[in-house]
Image 1 (cartoon, helix red, strand yellow):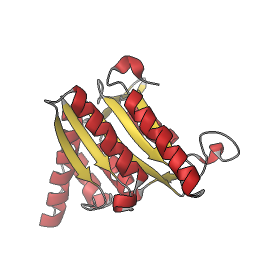
Image 2: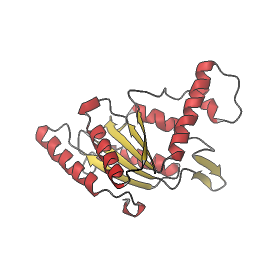
Image 3: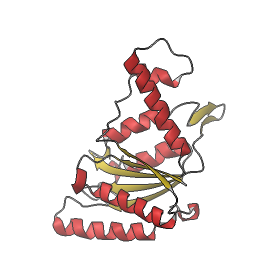
Length: 208
């Protein structure tokens, strides 16, 4: 089993999403001790954001490029290869300004590639990165899973949508909310999130 572990929080050791993603990976390794983990800290080793020259590398025929751009084309291919080789993805995804971290978005923009992770057909786009499971460690400062702020959730809904676009629909979310509502609220939320981690199943039948 191959696990791809991504973290995108800027908060280092004080990050809730990093703590939860690490707990998820630890749980998976207890169940599958021979699994291999590829880890990417998308903050410590930031992926440059997509531009026209980098995106040109997604096409089979590209014009001559400078050495730096060629290196970015190679990086894109490495990122896609890591995704396609993985059986399970664990994504640490904090909410920033109602959406995902720009560092995570940069990774997404590199791996959503026509002909590699999706293809256009007469019936519309079809995902090619099928047969995978995703565990998302989601952290939010407020309450967005229900109530007045729910329509402003462009974080978890976006991740589900983009993963489904490339063919991954088996997604489980561990969520910690109200993290900026004081120490007691944070402790309560994290306690509940860790309990949810303990109940996670690596089997696709458990996706929700």
